Amino acid sequence: MEEELFGRRIRPHDRHQFEMKLDYLFQRKQKGYQYLIEAFFFIPTSLDLHPDNYGHSDFYKDVQNYIRFKTPTMTFEYLVDPEAKDSPLYRMNEKLGELLKKPEKKLQQKFLYEAKLLACIFRSTFRENIELILGEINRLKKLEDP
Image (cartoon, rainbow, N blue to C red; front, side):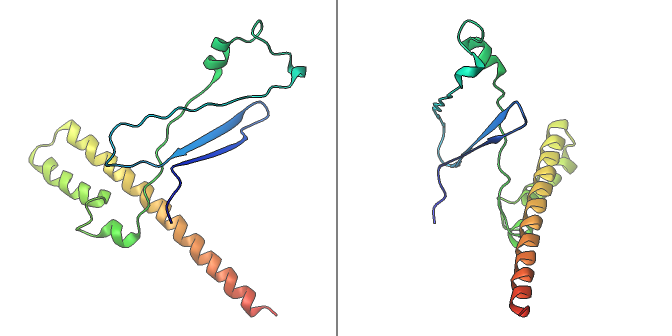
């Protein structure tokens, strides 16, 4: 099953704001991405918003953009596989060899980045596995209960 190229969710953030999340499928082999997003907001007239009291520049000034990359999905087996070049553990091992030869700040930062990525992937994979186990336990409990 192919993953959708584009996903979206809109939900209230708090009493005064809403949050719109957009997900894009990232293809490593394709260089240069460009997306055009058109959004239409229908504001109740009771709010009395119009260009004289809330102009375009005010609106765009109030918009906050955040970019966050989704944590890569890897099994524990793949994560610790010494041949898995996509695994941060593999790249950390390479960087460690370089660091021992030449302890430069830039190499230290790359090593730290890979260590943080490893921790994020481990946490995400651990959480997904726990959810699967708990789901299976609940399913088995339902089978036992008359």
